View (cartoon, rainbow, N blue to C red):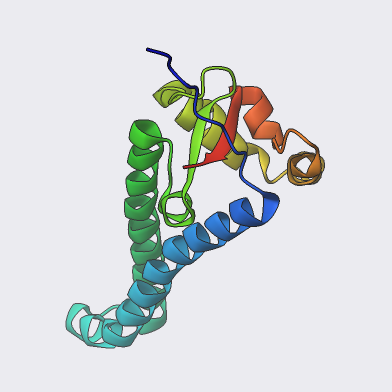
Length: 155
């Protein structure tokens, strides 16, 4: 019996961009909804607690935004650590894999080296440009893929 290796197809820049847009919508929507809900109902709480409504609105909005962002990111981190996919990657049929074995790279490489490192560095304009532009090379790897020794493939 002969085993055939499955052909690996790298995700295109457009597929990766669409997956990221889906993730950004998923991350942003709960924050906007929760922010609007807390903003609308905070006047009642301010009257009861005798607190300046403007201060309470800002505080409740901040707490709501942080809580919803944390919840969404925890879900995304669990998916990355366990399956090598965010919700956006899952919808687009993509997966993060080890560049050599094409297997799940493990939680440390998929989550810490790839996601958290990337999130920390994106504030640096030079890193952002290098990370974004490298995807157009034949390897289709961003800088964070090089750091974690991963590729994004279609599944």
